[in-house]
Length: 275
Length: 193
Ligand SMILES: C[S@@+](CC[C@H](N)C(=O)[O-])C[C@H]1O[C@@H](n2cnc3c(N)ncnc32)[C@H](O)[C@@H]1O
Image 1 (cartoon, rainbow over the protein chains, first blue to last red):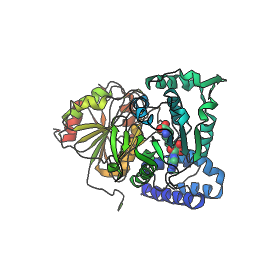
Image 2 (cartoon, chains in turn yellow, red; image 1 turned 90 degrees about the vertical axis):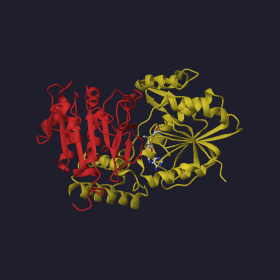
Image 3 (cartoon, each protein chain N blue to C red; image 1 turned 60 degrees about the vertical axis):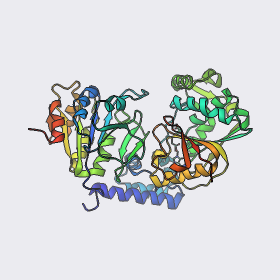
Image 4 (cartoon, each protein chain N blue to C red; image 1 turned 180 degrees about the vertical axis):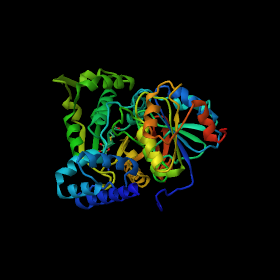
């Protein structure tokens, strides 16, 4: 019976957060969010998730900390290098035919993904004609993304990823290292607009030619995934590109017919022409 | 208990393995018939290795073998491997989901995460198997499987490539059956003497 009560408590907590703070986690994939809320319960020294609900309802600062449990912040520069390589080799030639480009990095976390795109687009000569929209619901992460400062200890992995993605320059050209931190060059942010946007509750804000939404949809249930993919579809111009995470697929989505597989292993899709 | 396991009746097997796990899996998976219950496998491999395990076993097995995609419905006749660097979780509607959340016992995928979520979704219709390994992942997970009414099997530590994982599982789950590797497949397919 224990599990059943916890399920009820998780639902009530998510409902409470929605009513009080308008963050809507009610349709997130249950197995994972429940595990993370149980960790949060222990972290805040609560005996039950109901007690955690009491805390968060009466103290907004708890919500800020709880966001680190409700959302998962893991990223890398050029994460899954094969994805960026495929974009470089197969998507970029299409993008080069456009005079101006809008690219949406949905669920950008602490910024690694959008900096990867900025660097790739600079290398491919597309940067000056592009605006990147980097969106997320986690304020803390958006702030870090804007700062563009990462631990120096991560640069080895990032450099290797960049190289494997077919990088044409040296990653060290784009950051300065000091006191154990690597600060990415301000000029990379010139073309990036960071903003608070939820794939669950907000609407489309621009027409785009490329949407990259990676390792965000895994935290949603199928209905929410369908909503988010619907947004991407509405935002993309005809024959625009959608890139997903390494283990994400449109196969189980209601939008499967709206897209064609463009690079199967790299999870790249192209929007079909609308009738 | 009413309504606790919404899809009662469909069964599944979860397997956790670490050091020595590939060899142990080779003694089990190829023996399962093509239409066997779905099998979900979490094996610890070095991170950032493009996984070839699914391909490796696809050639050897009668069941179809895939690396799990997010939201895939769990289907009989299929072996699902947790992809490297993601946790594999089971949802109540018997679909799979993935997550990048923090490693458990330094492992992502984590055996405990797979077993605990599968136990909640399958209850008594689940068999959990802990194989060779050199850490304690899987012990808490197998405990959850048994607490939910499922069956626990553990590879006999004697003869295992690494004993710590089976030994930890035995300590946490004294009621689980401890079997030599060669007998586990027979136990699963009902050919045990
Ligand atoms: C694991 S990170 C992915 C980072 C990056 N895209 C990558 O693949 O490396 C998931 C991100 O999704 C964000 N997220 C969760 N729910 C969201 C929502 N409803 N709308 C937008 N972003 C969301 C989280 O805050 C987190 O930053």
